Amino acid sequence: VDVAWEMLMEPAYANLRACIYTSPSELERFRQLLVNAVMATDIMDKDLKTLRNNRWDVAFDTSREQTSRDAVNRKATIVIEHLIQASDVS
Image 1 (cartoon, rainbow, N blue to C red):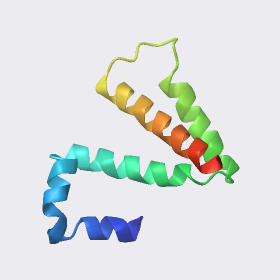
Image 2 (tube, rainbow, N blue to C red):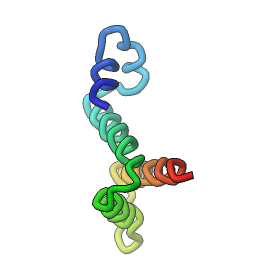
Image 3 (tube, rainbow, N blue to C red):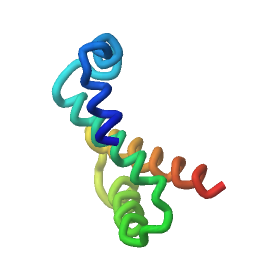
């Protein structure tokens, strides 16, 4: 991930980066999503599975109001993680 990130940050990929994010907060969000997606492929690590399941529980907790952009992002991220994990198993 670090090597790919370093390559993405090279000047040659400035136009690509401009399409991916337009602000420091979007950059941070993209980096977090990328790392979480790669980590989701590690299906043998029980601690990561526990953390992933806990994030699912928080994201889809129906006992509290979750309408903010952060809540939507949290749901999208955890769904992507589970999809990647499921595709990695099959």
